[in-house]
Image (cartoon, rainbow, N blue to C red; front, side, top):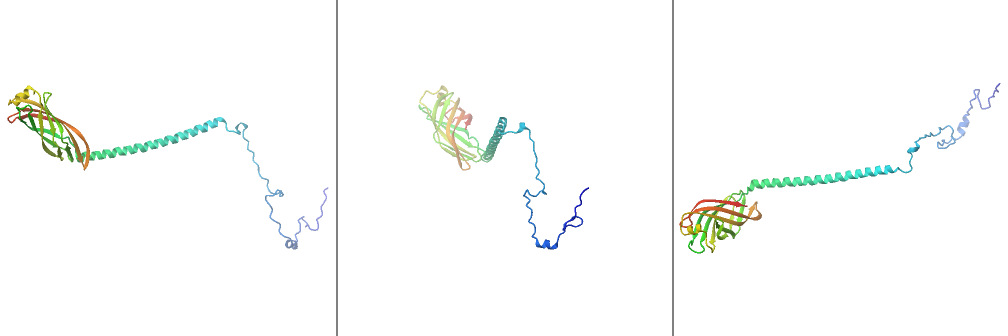
Length: 265
């Protein structure tokens, strides 16, 4: 049989301790408990988790194949970056070139539409022979020069070459005069050609004696010319003119039957 415990002097009938008011006022409050101390068994113990990793997946040093993969990835990133940079530079370069081409094309179109450059046109108007019975007769040509350009002027240099031939045989040569010509202008120049000291072809000899038979001549000119448009000088170049002329005799007011001039500019 269990022993009965008698209540003590400070216990009630139910076993609870009796608290005296004087004791509550005379004693100091207990200090706050230190939660970090291990002397308090009522605090819950810290929880511990155990993570299990398969042994074959634990590495102290990364395996070699990982280094290869990382290096390959770095190379791919580097190559992609370099390729992107190159493509960007090429894109800017192509855009700049395209802009320059479009701008130059626009200026060229405006220039052509405004200036309307054209090749000078030459026409043989008249021929007159002086001193036909001498060893060196003089052939005087009157030539019209037309500038069809809209806003381009031409300057023809002095002392261009002039050669007169008959069926491929040169019979005289001379120089061309200087000429400054505005746009849409027609000017006349006189070209003096001296006969060469030679035995002239039979057709020329008969014509110089007064024959009215047809005479076939070729007048060839080589002239230095420069152009100006919009107030700017354009690089000079040479033009060559080739005129095929058929006349009715050479003396006693010879008349030109046919003539055709071609200009290479």
